[in-house]
Image (cartoon, rainbow, N blue to C red; front, side):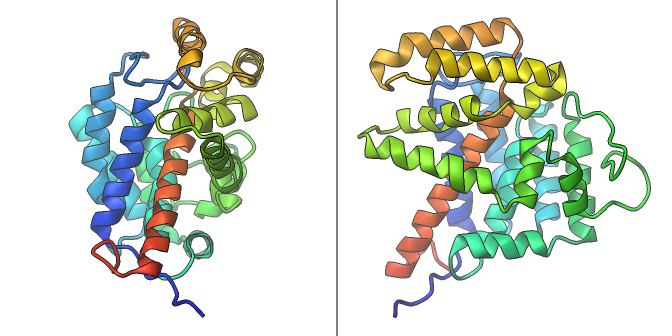
Length: 294
């Protein structure tokens, strides 16, 4: 029987996080900021700085999820001055904590989510308040912006799960990443695609697969579903590669002209790339111990 995969070292987790952020920026992602086109009053440099500033906190050894999230968002707000990575941080902080643990990543992640406590709640809600995401609004129950004792993380995420894909991740064991994200990545690689087209494939799987939460918060559920359906019609059958560049950039420009930013799709894309890297590092550690392993 093979030995259990050890936990990953903080430096390896931080580099995997930065690499996932860089890879997401390198790919054409219609409606989002990337190296081929800025947009929404944000630049690639803003996101590169955000990745560098938040990485040490996302990967802070031994830190709880809430502490990682609050410190990462606080560093980003101080250094960049706007919300560029709240969703990324909320998805990647639990993955980073799980990666420190020995054994397969998915059961470790499930344990991390089950262990979220009041301290995690305080940190996560502080991160959300610091980022001030557009269109957050108020919840009838478990409102994370309300004063008083923080509601349990999983209760608040469950309350928001139907309207927010990142909240849904917390109560489904990150189902979208393991299902939609990793499946799209594996299929793209199976078709012989390389980066950055594999990243574009992941983004399109999220963009066409369900209405984007960020767009729904700002413009309503109908607008988000219209954006999804139009993306599916225009890009769903696209054969990715250089021949697809013009169609992708045309759709990208149209979304940006309309002020539509599928930010949740981008966040899920980064987290998928991070998850994939962590799983590969785990396998490497299991095969041969090295500097990436604890």
